[in-house]
Image 1: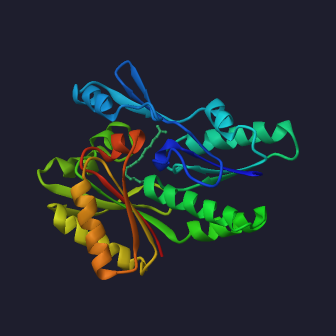
Image 2: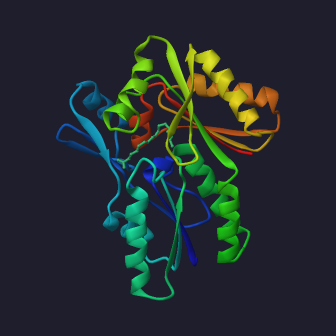
Length: 275
Ligand code: X90
């Protein structure tokens, strides 16, 4: 096939059907250990290393990692984690320039998701659908841009420690979470940064709040992707709440992989939907 979809591992997707796909892993660094967010990552081992409490951080894919993921495809649609929080998109742009230099027939379209996790997953799924419908490149591009303007990301987190520790939210915002039982509900802002919307006491209040925000954003019956870090129960409850109010919603639940598990932390939820 002429087309390939590529993303970084912040999409929590390692494989798709019908269209060639590769991903460039981010890395979670704990002390002197480097956990690559790929098929071989053992999340339990990563958590054990993290719970020892040492210094930790993350690293985005390098130009070489992106080039490897592009492979030999003629046309690549490349979905990255938000440029507002990561260098991944910049590295993909640099890789694009090198890739296209090789041969005038090669093209890479970098799509900055301004988001992470389930919203990236929705973009990948839409690209897959557009490609499979037999559209030409220009129409696929127009279609994905139009769709990206209609997708959103909400999150519900118990702890912002790793986000604050790596400069992705301010320490004063992260302090809110230190109060027991507080859940922070927020969204990916239009600039692709974290925007805190509510501090909720307890999880069930936070889940209803998320559904309310979704509806205010214009959700009626489209796609919903919920990703969770060891919180199947809350993910299921959230799915139930959405299905109760919107019986034709298409809701899928999956676990976060390395990068999103690290930042969403234990119990964290991410919710992607379209409007
Ligand atoms: O380049 C790197 O090292 C990666 C940095 C990633 C930083 C943030 C990832 C957030 C993942 C947390 C909840 C959702 C936030 C969405 C904001 C757009 C998950």
